[in-house]
Length: 139
Image (cartoon, rainbow, N blue to C red; front, side, top):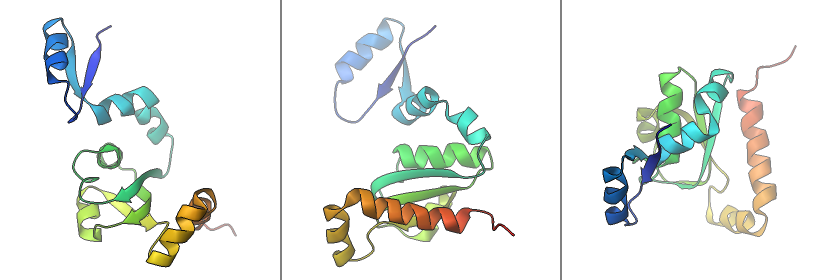
């Protein structure tokens, strides 16, 4: 079994190069996470992929886990929604990655204060609303 090295932007390039010389291979951090959690099997059995981010911004769309999840789900023709503390990018940008919807826990300054005071409660409430939006209606 080969070992992969998830490369990041935080330094450690000398160590990374040394491990490659010893037979390691470079893999993206997102790819390593998706493989570690068995993403393909999980997403294959799902109707909807839900991922999250503290703040969904331009950096989120540039190779962070949210972008990797969205791209992997798109390759499997699975819709992806993002639940984030705040959403600071537009629909056009997120749709370009294959994200079907974005939902902010906090949409204005008053809600930011509430989310910081009760992160579990506000995230849970937003998640329930998102689930009801995406769940099939029962007759």
